[in-house]
Structure formats: C-alpha cells, structure tokens
Amino acid sequence: MDLTAFELVWLRTVMLEMGFKVHGPMKLYRTIKKHLTLQTTGYLTRGLYILKCTVVLFETRIYSKLGIDVIMLQFLGSVNNSALVLYLLVMYVSVKGWLVVLPLYSGLSRADQDIVFSPTPRGKRKVIISTNIAETSLTLEGIVYVVDSGFSKQRFYNPISDIENLVVAPISKASARQRAGRAGRVRPGKCFRLEKLQRDFLCSGKEDRRNYHLVDWKLKALGIDNILGFDWPASPAPEAMVRALEILYSLGILDDDAKLTSPTGFQVAEIPLDPMNSKMILSANLLGCSEEIITIAATLSIQSIWIYVRGAQKELDEAKLRFAAAEGDHVTYLNVYKGFLQSGKSSQWCHKNFVNYHAMKKVIEIREQLRRIAQRLGVVLKSCERDMQVLRKAITAGFFANACRLEAFSQGGMYKTIRSSQEVYIHPSSVLFRVNPKWVIFHSLVSTDKHYMRNVISIDPSWLIEAAPHFYQHQGPNPVAY
Image (cartoon, rainbow, N blue to C red; front, side, top):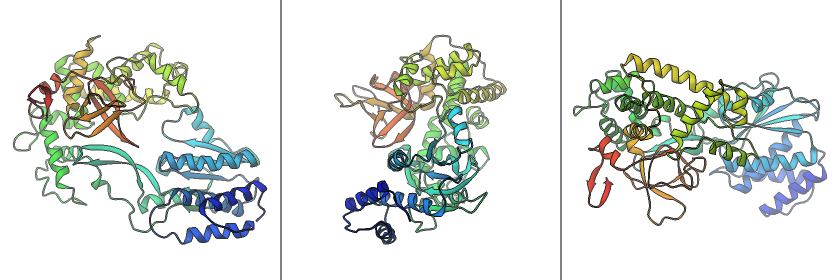
C-alpha cells in the first residue's frame, strides 16, 4: 500500500498516543489491526475509536482505486462519535482533496438533502455522515461501503425517575444487518463495524424502554381490560405499569375501575396522538382556545420546525427572536405558524427565517387532520385571540405531570421535577433559555451531559391543582407539592 507522508505521520501519531513503538507503514497498519482484533469485550475507548476509524479509511483505499465513483455511508450514534470521525475526515480531506463529506439527518434543509442525492463529481469520493435516518427511511443509490458505529440515539423511559429521554445506546443485531444491507446494492460492497456484535441483541427490546401510558391506553381502547395479565412479548417493569395507570387516571381517561371514562376516555381514544396531547385538545374546547391548541399539537408532532445551518447559529438565534414569546416555546410556534400563513406559505420566507418549509407543510397537513377529528368529536373550534393565559391552562391540563420548579439560588438555571425531584435544565434551543421562569412545563426531555427540557412554557403553579387535584396537593407554604 502506497502511503502519503501525511498518512504516515497520522499513523505514527496515533500509535504514539496509544503507546506503541513500531516503524514502517505496513507494520504500523498491521499492528493497528492486531491491536483491534485483541479487543473482544467492552465498548471502544476514544483511542480505539481513532484507531478503527483510521483502519477504515485505509481499507477503503485498498479496496477501491482513486477516481472511481464510490460512496461511503457512515452511521453515527452520538455527537462525540460524529466529532471524532469528522475530525479524521477533515484532516484527510485537507491533504488529499478528493473526499466530498456531507451530513445527513432529519433536520437537514431540502437544499442540503439534494446535495446528498446528487451525483458524485468525477474523481471524487462521496462520504455521507448520517444518523439512523439512512437505515430505513431513505435509500441512497451507489453506496459501496458502510461504516457502522454500532450505536444510535434511542428513546428510553425510566419509571423510577419518571424521565423519558434520548440516550446513545448499542443497536440491535437486526439494526446492524439493516445498516449493512445499505452497501453493495449496485456493485459488491463491504460493511465496516466499529463495535463488535457479541450478543444476539446489543440493546434491550422496545418493550423495556417505552413509556407505558401510551401502550396501556391503546390496549384499553381495544377493549383489553386485564393489562397486568396481558401476554407481553417482554414483561414490563411493574413500576412502569403502575406509573402509566396513574397518569391515565390523573388525566381522567380511566375511572376507579381502570376502565375508559365517558366521554373523555373514549374521545381521547379517537385522537391519533399520545394521551397528554389529546387531553390538551379536549381541555382547550372548554377553555375556548381549540384553534391555537390544535396548531400547537400539530407542531409538537414534528421533530423540529427550525433549520440548523452549520456556522449560522447567531443568525438562527436572531430569527427565533423575531417570533419569541415571553410565555415560552409553544406560543413561539404559534407565532411562526401565523407568520407562515401570512407569507402565503412562502418557501422564501422560510429560508429567510431559518424555518423548515417541508416541516411547516407537514404541520398544516397534521393540523387539518386534527381539525376534522376534533369537529367529529364535537369540539367547537374557537380562537382565544390574544388571551395566552387560557392557552397555557389548556397545555397544563394535558402536561401537568411534566411540571418543574426553579431551584432557589441554583447555579445555571437548575430545575427539579415536582413528582420525582429530578434535576433538569431548559434546553439551549428554547426561547426561555437563560430566562428561567420559576415554574414551567416541558413537552419532552433529552439527555446528554444533563437532562434538558424541550418545548417549555411558563405556568402558574395554582393551575396544577386545578388541572389535577388528585395528582398534586397543598402542603405548607409551598403552592404545590407531591
């Protein structure tokens, strides 16, 4: 193998970091391969990850000639993995100049997506750095090599801490096979795995990590009353089942006999959303803000309406400020929706304001479906105009279980959930970041180095007792306590 001066220096640097003392390009390469072969247990350390990424880069050079139209797809599991692989590739590109490195993820703008699907320039090799969206959702033509990190972001629910969040976890063997199947559709290909598959399933099944209030509600809607005796593919934790039934009872969906209530329980069963969003819509009917709440529910069904452009964070923050509402993210989304309609659903308007045009089209589509369902259920579509208090009360009626209180004298805006006293923080993407209202409700949590609240809105604590007096109670000087 003909190694460049840069490649030789890079390999020697890697070997020095790992504590090896060898000489000669091929000897370096063989030593790396041997060292990685010896690693049969545990996850890859940062050093080993560097080594294996380096090996993949060299092996793809060995297996194909420079100048041939070859696409390599890299599956990533976390930001750390992303940064590491990109660092390797950028260094490689800076010297070689023949790699075209492109990102691929769900929040990517349409223009950037078109670049990913465009033909590879002659004499170049396309390298696509992707999340698991390329595993099943998209088909990329011409993929020859797949590099699988062995990880993905998955949603886990902890019934003890009452937190559902996204964490980086090992993928299943089935997912690994699916990723490997992306390679070699038009010509012989190869899959490089950065993590060994040592068990049939590297991660637990979906039954072990989901929030069961949605599952229990669906079973109840199907007429299956004996949930505890149901023949589950994998038996859920008792804490998860108890927590789910408690939430459904507190929402007024189940009665004292754990059966669907009438009419609320049966109405919720007709709405194709999770029970909290459905209850929010039904409560909006009583409070006279159903038009706005249906819009918010449709927006919350989309992963993100914003476009995140590399190197344009300042411009994005300025665009958000144009729509920002003091009440929080939900009202901000409402302002974006109104602005989109006033622009005539213009894609140019979306581009100017860093709004995802296709996401907004999807919001309109979902909203129309929810509007038809709500009317069928007897919900009167009425606008609250500018009365944001009733709107926030409707949100509280659905998401009262996600209430948090700002810790007095806390550093960095630390909140604690009312029910489980978990430490959480407002996500930097929220319009309430650094504003830190005393009481907030969140829509979901994402876990990185901390538990971050996404889609946050400020509330009055007295609304929690109004919405769910059996869930919260007065206790001493505190307005709400569990």
